[in-house]
Length: 53
Length: 274
Image (spheres, rainbow over the protein chains, first blue to last red):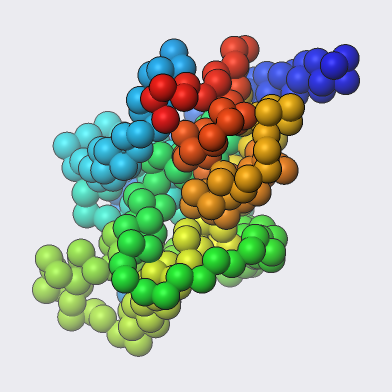
């Protein structure tokens, strides 16, 4: 029982840490202007995707 | 809350339809195209409302040689919250595979061996080869792109139709091969190929939404594996990296041994709704 509770606590801690890391990466990316990069790339028709390149 | 989850689980096909429409709802194009899609949905689709995360990663990391913090952050956030749940509920290509499997054809129940191929594809086709060649090599081969972008564009645009070459037919052949495979095996692209699924798979063990099995009530009848769209022995490893969190096992378990653990509370199967 203790092992299970200890393991669940560890999993929760890892989960919270991952969420914080993910949000931090997201914010760093936004700060570096990657939103615009993704937007411009997504707006241009991807010829590779449709098999023309 | 548990009734809401079970009610939703029964209506997963409706959620998948709404997701396919929502992710390809042209009306939000100008506001949402900068957001990475929470599923594998090709942004070459004429109506795609979001950016494909795998395409975006290749473009930023491969073509521009930069770390795709923003896209990886979004992918990581989804993974940390629901693991591969997006695969089971939101992905239009996953839904397409489930539809194709309903076609009358001999069925082949393949074990989940060689699932590591999706990691090889992730590393090689999404990171290494695009980094070396500065081209989006997974996009060049992706069958989802052919289905959602290649075929619609060829139908609606005479200019695009005039540009068709051998490569287009190769992509169509790849899609055809996958369709044939999907008709005999459940979700083969998700299990052996999808790089987005490969990114999310390790999160299944530590995501906020997890499955758990009560070993004291489980009778190992294997009903969970029979209904599982990715053929997992749920009672042995409920948080396998291939699990798409469709909750079919939760609904099917005759002993209500499988429960959904979401954030800080535990959700158990409601037998009255199953």
